[in-house]
Image (cartoon, rainbow, N blue to C red; front, side):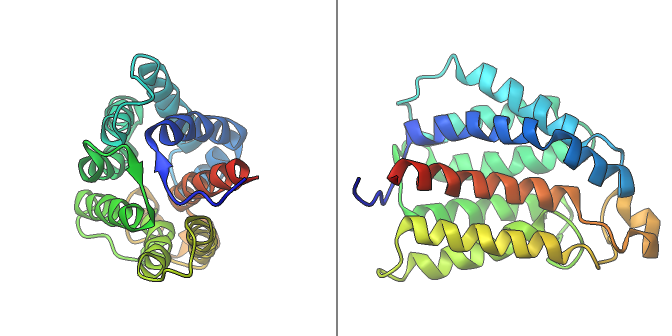
Length: 220
């Protein structure tokens, strides 16, 4: 099978269903992480949100534009994911949808633009959240840096770019363990938040890794 250098609308459609599967597989893990520094519901909320997203997508043509698919997901997440996470994940997908409205294919350059806009939405909703504050930004930001580098390097394939992004997101996720939380409920714990991996960074990593895993499988 040849190298696949774009993700189509149909790919994104299927990726959302894959994300739901991954969230179901990691529901207890995410909830356990959240129990240490949050409301102990992150895994439950992620499953609930992506369950509604996939239900809504059953009424959307898989061949419609990428933006329509991602906006459908965004609205479902906004409606169903509880607490502060709903607006954060909803805005992540909503901003990515804005960049891809009318687009049926996403190459690595557009993927970088998507993630950049998505990150901006997360940071804006979070009141200017920066890397190092023990949030989902700690996974998304390093992934974006890798995608931006790859976008301007013709020697890096889409699959390689996503592999680098997923690895960077994983490292960013793990880097939250020694951090003191500066945002959200976890910030109330102060020093006691140290030593725990951030659940939002973890689910964000899982989303990015699912896209990579999907493309890797498709290329065979």
